[in-house]
Length: 551
Image (tube, rainbow, N blue to C red):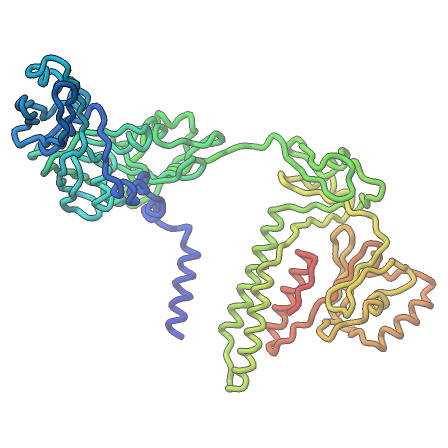
């Protein structure tokens, strides 16, 4: 039990303290820009082609062909003095020579011996094998074999790539005999495609220095990463050179930690080039925009366009003036469905289900028999919870009168539904034969249920909902009267004597053309509290999604 409590406490802290997560922790959650560069792709292929600027070195092999008055075809190796020895001609110094200059140099050398009718062709076939030390902030420092023409990326990839949390992508040194031959900034390759192709020799060293200054960038940008910069403080102009904000970005929120105190700054996008950032800042690009118009979808019995573009702000009455209702439109029962309301309904349902699940899993039993009963009951309820989580609330806003049409402002993405006039009464839920019946003002609620075969064994006869075409809901169960077969007979007699007056609940008609009768199921569980919770959830689902979910 103590272990379970510790786990629940850990989960609680993780969820409820997430918003207070230190800036450093938030930054660490973002990937480092360039960290996906080393996935083994470079190390799988050695460089076998030779560009014109490749410089010949000791150990390279050249295939030489002569034809005409002299015939010769053989692969020659550049010796330790850097010479290529041509039989009957002599040595030619080629070490350090560009690949593009090899054939002209060979032609000139051969022509010194054979002046007429000798053609020549040469092809560099194999580059010098080399071994290069890779050290510093890489995953696996060591000595790695390759070829002189292989790129710096090949050897870094062989070493497992740069340690993204400690190594620099901006400061990589290629050393030979203790001297720095070149300094490489991999952002030039990532952002521009530029990469130095200087050759390696045996014993060269690649050294990855420690990471420099980092900004964590997210929000309305094309790429959310930790970006590295050389300067401190970091000029805003450099930030915009590596980060590409989305077209709708208007501001940035800068969070900093100074002396153990957090601080936030709000900067307009146009002012970023003049702003300076401290290493470790988190930068969130924000799209601040006020809507000039809103889009509203029209569904149901409507002859006009399926979407309306209205100026912001607009009310429901503004939209109604532009509607083209069909001949069977029930315009007084127009409904609004809103995404934000549906999300809120979904969140409230999820909270109720979480509370129910917690009570089920923490319930205690006094006896072994009770434990077995509770286990079977818990299994049933947990399956019910899983199905209930899949319920999709509709997000309907209930309108009680015309005055509200001028008061309620529409949101972008709202859906207006014009229901169709109907003279049917739908009966479903816990009845034997769910069906649609023609509305008859002479008969009662009980008769409609009777015409649907009556209640099922699992029906909660205290909880019957009437859903009206405008989405409003009345409860027909008052918690006192339990409807039975005898009640049905008595009700039928009373209905025939009622002078065809429709029944009312309060001041409004209970059953109107187009209404739906929802009979909710019973919560057949032992615990009174859990039974109340399940009943509440059944109500939530019926009201939010207009469906009856059975246990």
